[in-house]
Image (cartoon, rainbow, N blue to C red):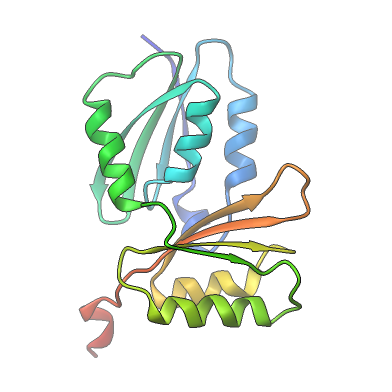
Length: 176
């Protein structure tokens, strides 16, 4: 039986934060054969793909609309139907339909272009963008509009990469 460390990043994500470095630091501190049980508000498909490249299998469980539990196990399948979990992940975070390189633009133009593009996108479509800095003001706008996102800096630390999934406004949010 693999020992799993618990890591809960739900509140960080709800507050518009980016827990990527905390997650990577947790994985770096694991003992040989140890895994992680990650608690998040969505299934972090780009993170899952990155950790698969590092030799971790995963099993995702959706507990509620904004409550996910993802078990990462080194070098083995953690049980359950991994193929179904992967298909679910790809359905939630499909390949980006839109790719924007906004690295040569000064603020607030990258945020304006991203928000403008999101207005034309269908629910569930994904946008990928490259930026020359972490878009802190954009996070609040995305949260206010109900979109989901994940992002991090590239290996050079100079380019910020973000994936945004367009989501519809909830009917309950529109009603008083």
